[in-house]
Length: 183
View 1: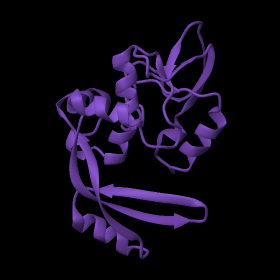
View 2 (view 1 turned 30 degrees about the vertical axis):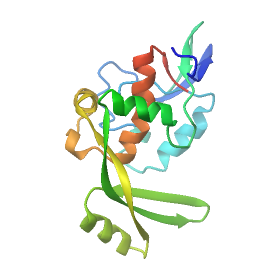
View 3 (view 1 turned 180 degrees about the vertical axis):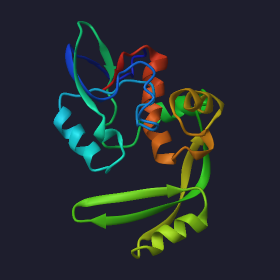
């Protein structure tokens, strides 16, 4: 681990999800085969419930994990990955950049985004409720990212959502650096 790594040493943490062997479900997650933990399982469970029926919220278990000396990469909560993590993901073939589109809208205090590789799909989504359409740079899977995706999910790498790819970069970084998971 480098001097710039953001490290948390925690003895008791919680995970909301599925830790059963092959992790056949969910077919998609923001942690892949990695482990994400926090001290706030109720917050995570509530976020999962917002995703609706037929999702991980219906099968998620709350685990309390206790271990001495476990180290977790301290990811940026609710924000984009640190630049050093993105640089690492680019340099190690996990991600590439490509032009794309983002649809943005506000519901109450919540700001929402969806990203698309193709303009026609983005325009259709933006037209749903007069939502904003923006040209952006998206992340797409590199060769290492494609191999990881194939092992971790029941979805083809070509169907990988750019926002999920972005959320996986700290997980890949943490696994490569020898962390026990992501905080």
